[in-house]
Amino acid sequence: MCVKMLSDYEVSTTGDASILQRGLPSAEILQTELAWRATNRTIQVKSPYTSQTYYMARYPVNNSAPRPELYIEDYLTVHDPTLSTPLTDSQAADLYSELASGAETGWDYSSLRDGPCPSSQPVRKLEPPRCSHPPPSRRWDPCWDSSKLAFYDFNLTSNSRNSIFTAATFYPVWNGIVPDEVLSSQANAFGYFAAVNMVMNRYNGAIALDILKPFLTHSLWDSPNAWPPHQYIIISALEALPSNLTTNALPTPGSGQSTYDLVPAGQLNFTEAQLPGQPYHNNQAVNFTATGPGADVNGLNGTVVNGGNATAGEGWAATLRREMANRYVTSVLCSWYATGGSISGMLPQLPAAQLNLSNSIGNTGNMFEKFSNLNVDSSGSGGEYTVQVGFGWTNGVLLWATANYGQSLVAAASSSSGAAGLRLSLPSVAVMTVAASVSLCRVVLVVIRTSVE
View: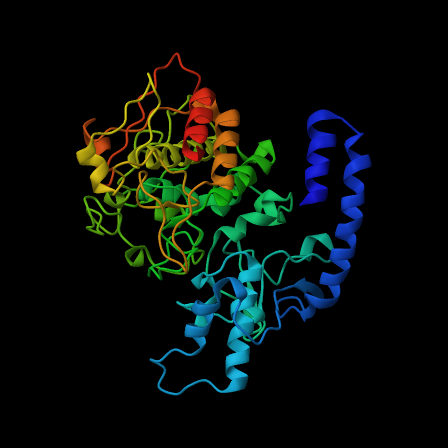
């Protein structure tokens, strides 16, 4: 990341080569770090698909005790009193290693590792889709499924790709690694991002890490949690596509079908009927219908609820970027407003009766670390600790989104604005009605400042 940041700053943005004098020593330190990881965090894997051998990175932490930062939680996981047979010392050490490995991945924890809870997630036996080895046309075949148009973790135990579709599939394209199959046609390029289109149409909030699995695990990173870095990475991956792949209009489903029909067969590895419903009101986890066009409860003419306004001649990638940017900014600002945020002389605080619904009386607004895929006015939930407020990457992605997509952002839908507003989940509805003459960037800076004071 450091080297990529230096390149983006010096080559792509400023042309200021002097930064290299200060930055390259850091890069040399990273070379030492990379050498350590090559020795301790990589393994040779022979692909069952091409019989080629690759060096692939993984997270095999050796650890025989609880993590210091979550000592009690790890101890109770290993010494779970509900276990019919207590773990042996060897099994306990293995589980402590898996817990530490999960933490090293940065996604601690998620059921993307084939288990609904940390005690059943074999992290050390997974290779994330970040493999690199020549020849270029085949370097990612252990993780890349060319028929499903997606990257998946490679499982060393089963010697095959996992079947769980996550936001990690977009990491390679974000870094400029675009498979030949994606480059071959606009249809395939869209197919790679078709699940994003489905989520925008089907659910109220931003994109979740696991693109809404059929079961909710209450793990820290799983659905319905939508994390700011993933919004940035997916939008940036859309930006990274060659322009000749993005000129067509956004595809529409066939007659009697929903946007699920546009997703390549098998990519999500579950049927449309297995998808969790979008709560239509309060905590009713149902759509009008689980399948068919009625399932796209957020679909509008050329856009989605809280997705900005459609533009004539807009390509499909630009549509998805606009919708994602709007949905993210709406989630950040509306959840801040729903928890007591206000701007003097511009945006009054919600009445106490509404703030009481989110236990926010006396609060001045929160910038959460994560948001709900099902609501635009609440934080995420689940995990080993209370949802954090602050929050660095939330603020960073918000500033980036407003700087790059400010001209495409519009006010959030209101609960009283007709059919569209009804798609906002209650109990609390936050409506940003900022005057058109006020700079959105100024509003965002005020929101960030007031949330940390």
